Image (cartoon, rainbow, N blue to C red; front, side):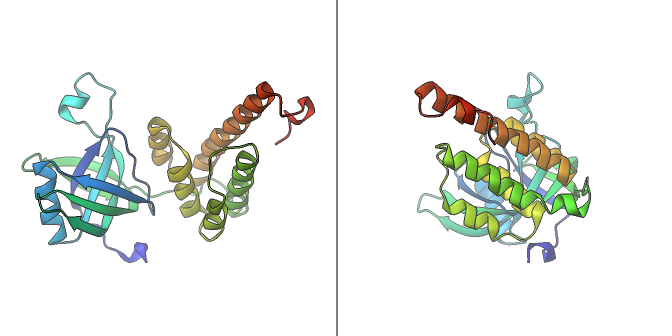
Length: 226
C-alpha cells in the first residue's frame, strides 16, 4: 500500500515547467541532465523517492532560478531503465502532496526539507461519495459528444474505491492545463477540489455541444441538456 511508505523529511527535487505530479498517478520521465543523473543514482541506492514540482513562473527570474511552487508531490520510482550513454527512462508513481519548508542544497542537485500536505474532506461523507459517479457521468457525456477519451477510462475510474484517489487520477488523466492542475493540487479540501474539476468538465461539455451545433449535428433543444 502506498500509505505504508515512509516519506523522508529531506528529498531531492526535480522542477519541471510542463508537468504536475499527483498522488497515485504514474509519470514517465527521461533523465538526461548530469545533475538529475547524479540524483537518480543516489535515490536508487536509498529510498527511491524524490519530489516533482511545477515551475512557479510568477517572477521574472523564475526560469533562471527554477523556482518551484511550494506545494508539490513526492513519488517513488516503480521502474527504471538506464541506457548505454547514461540517460535513463523511469516511471515515477506519486505518493502524497508535500509542502516545501526550505531548500537545503542546490549542488549537485536541489534537495529540500518537506512535510506532508494533508487533504481535508471539505464536505460531508455523503457528498464525497458523489465524486466517483459524478465524474463518470460527466466523462460519459463528453465521450458521447465526441471527446477523444478512451471508453476504457470509465472502467478504470470505477475500479478505484477511494474518492480522493479517483479524483486525483481523473485530474491527472483529463486536465491538460498545467495552471489548473497546480491549482487543483494545492486545493486542500477534497470537495472544493472536486467542484473545481467538475466545473472544468462541464465547460468541456458545453464546448463540445457548441462545436456539434456549429457542425449542424446537434438539435437546438439538446444544447441545454447535461
